[in-house]
Image 1 (cartoon, one colour):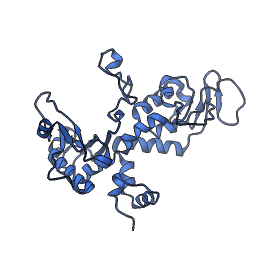
Image 2 (tube, one colour; image 1 turned 180 degrees about the horizontal axis):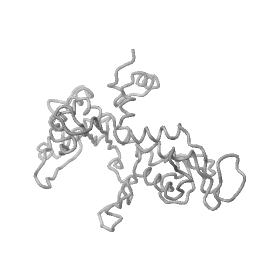
Image 3 (tube, helix red, strand yellow; image 1 turned 120 degrees about the horizontal axis):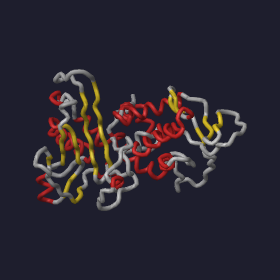
Image 4 (spheres, helix red, strand yellow; image 1 turned 90 degrees about the horizontal axis):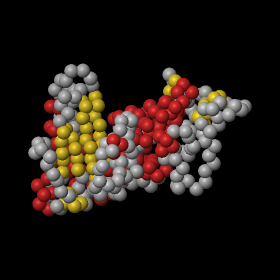
Length: 326
C-alpha cells in the first residue's frame, strides 16, 4: 500500500523509514476486532445560510472491540500535540488507563451532542452501562465548508455511524477473497484480481470484469481505484469510452483468432464490445455509496429488507434498531 486511493505516493514509498509494517489494507481495521463506521451528511449548495446549509459534515465511529462488544474497555492513553481541540473522556483515560466504549469524531459544534448520543446508544444497545459513562469524542472544524452553526448532526446520525460498521469492516474480508481471479499485465490489476485460498476450485481463462472491481469500490477503494485507473491507462479506448467500462476483457487472449463476440487486438488482448447497464449501474451506485453512504442508509430504512434479513437469521448491528415492516 505505497499509494493513496487517488494514486499519490505515501511516505513509505518516498523512503521515510517508519517503524513496523502496514497491514494488508494499511487500515485501522487490519487490527483484529477493530470496526469502523461512519455517517456522511451532504445536502445543499451555494453560500452558507445558518440553519439551512450547505451541509458537509458527519460522524466517524471507531469501535475498538467491535460492535458486538461495544461497551467493553481497552487499555488506552492519549497525547496532546498542541493543546487545542476538544476530546471528551480524556481525563478518565489518563486516570484509569482505559477507554470504555466507542470513540466518535465529528465537527466542533457537535462534539458534545455526539458524546451524549454515544451514551444513549450504549444504554439502548447494552441495556445498562453501570453507574456512569465517559465516552471519548473528538472534533474537527469543518465550518469553511459546512453550516456548522446549523447543528445538523443529530442523535440518529451518531447511532447510524456506530452501527453501520459493515462497509469498512468488510474491507478486511475482501482483502482475503478479492473479486475474481486473473492473470493480467499490470501490478495494480494483479493486486486486485488475485487468486485466493478461499477458492477451492477455479476455472480461470483470464477474463476480467471491470464491474466486479467498480462495484466493490465502497469496500476497498485503496485497491479498486488504482486498478480501474490502471485498466484505463493500459488499455485505453479498448476498455473505456464515453459510456464507461466494457463488460469484460482478457489480456491473455492476445493472438489473432476467431471469436464469437467482442474483438481481439493482437498483442494486447480480447475486449468485449458491449457496455451493459447492469455493469455501469453498480459502479455508479457504489461510487456514490463510497462518497456518502447513500445505498447503505437507504437499505437500512427499508423495513422489508430488514424483515427479510431477520427471517434469514441475521441479527445484531443496525438490524436490531430497524423498524419492522407492517
